[in-house]
Length: 627
Image (tube, rainbow, N blue to C red):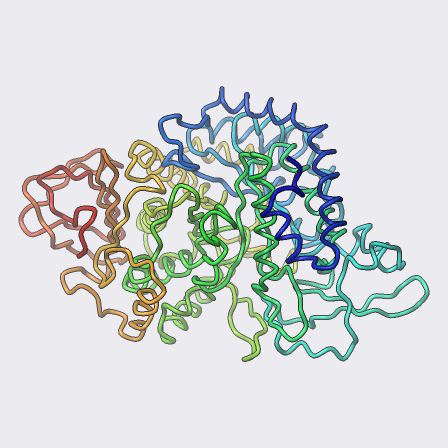
């Protein structure tokens, strides 16, 4: 059956292109036919390679993801090789094979295409690998051992892209590929994560000046999806990436995709329809491909890209997790983090969260605004700045507001004057929260390697995000990882212990039961009303379970064959989890027995315990009960 015969695809075509749906569907059929003729053999080989690798799917667990899944986020040129003329992608492939086989199932290589700015996110050619990084060979090779995630940078292209050159020249159909507006265009309603002017002037070959929509920078010109020819181009690129080994496609900046005058130009219904179209096509073709939406917005807006659970994204970033976790460790109080986490929906096997704390971007603070009082929000921003971080701002109809904290998570999470061992413990405990929550963990390479802020980066590269984007010598990294006295060794080995413990217990499956303890919504509220009720307690930040210390984040994970109580002390003081039980419980990370009698569990500063519960233990509620 051709795509045009699929009723969901046909309906979406009519909604997106009411007057051009027939021609759009005909072009879509041709694009898919051409792709199918050239790509099926490559896909079959990749599937066979994965089936023989350590990352093969577990036939006993038919869900899309399991507790075995961990995603690494990295740049293609993250590592420099000391071997003459060896390209960075080869160095990355070597690192992955030597260090990641037992830790990660997915590798997300950030845009590795020719680009003119923004560290790869101003793509000038979507179909080629940047020759400075290498070619397709190491990517294809790595896809035989790991599932690969590629970026589809679809909101904008580089101003140097051939499409934009032809747009300026007035060639058809490229004259429809970008948004232009009059110089006096009123952009007051437009929501975007930047403060520079929305329109950037460019000059056509005939000398005419044209003003083009640029959401993110003057070099990143926004694509016009009201042109069906452009949508066909982008679908062709999506299919190319799948044929080149992508098991996951990250839809970059999807919230801003569709522009309509008189609206905020964020979360437009047709932005959702575009995601639905990609999902319907992936499903129609029977592809084992995950669609991940990148929408750094308030939590309820973010999870709207799950759609009805089967018609939009398979996965969304859990964008509220990084700022709320960081704030918990900065304030020493997990109350806001607990209230938010208690509202997370219990996801099915068809959708899940990508839980992360750090990435190539900074820590977006917009998702935290509903959950932090103004005082706690300001304290978060001020503390990160005091610890060497930067603050980036965005334009809104209400004026300029903080958008992103640019910092290395290790450098920001604990007082830099504390002993190194305690800072390492604080950092690993923050990561343990991410690893404990339902979803798939996404770990930024600099977090896994125990990097600190690259303080010279913003000045050298001219933008705040450079503080967490330092490129590294592979030889030096290897030497430090092999030296037990280094920070990198301490963090990497601690991370490895946490990941290996997580992989052994089905209680950490994305579909396993999750109960956040110590809030009025501990039964995991999922309705909008319950979420609103939880947010309403923001100004009474410590109005939680009186028996739960404010410093402790506690979550119970439970499957049919295992129960694990995850306790994290987010403070620099010793506290006691007051829910005792007979005897002892085993910490599955360290393997030691922990005394849980005589009044509860003692938690040293910044300590995390993952306690395997036996039937006689009642340290937390059983699945199906509310606390």
